[in-house]
Length: 210
Image (cartoon, rainbow, N blue to C red):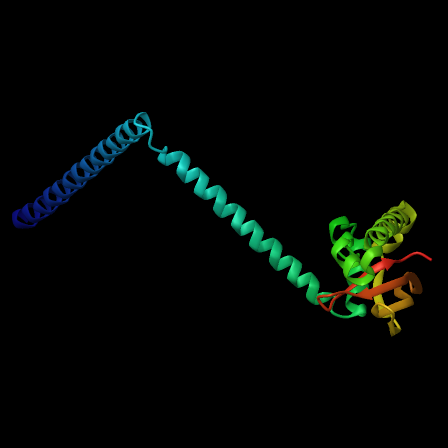
């Protein structure tokens, strides 16, 4: 019995010794970390006083540049994904329908000819055509933001795009097409008055409403 008690006491003493040693190591590590932090802060202040860049400010700047780069990559990926969806007039029609249904104005606007597209298609008349396209875009967007129309679109599903393609004076185009969607069991349409294939091979709108 005495031997067992002595063995148990020895084990407890060993455990207590190990605990104390662990606490001592932790204390020394904390002190070392505090010492290093203090030295780094003194070195940073001395460097700033001598005209060197503030490391903390440099770190924040690097993080901001990294964030901007990531945002730029994300934006470029989105643009490319959208361009791939617009490689056919049917794809363009579906993207435009989704933008109108979900009230995504930026997506809707990206489906229309921009100044560069108009310059490529119409040459000297590019600026004039750009203004016409911008007005047509605003008119179409406003028409489909009306509460009655929007309530209907939110309940609807895309069915198909009727987009008869032909070769025109400015390349491949669609005139008199339409989006067909279904709401409450009934098929309805949205006009696609004029679509063009642009320089990168994708399709964009010039006019929706007649």
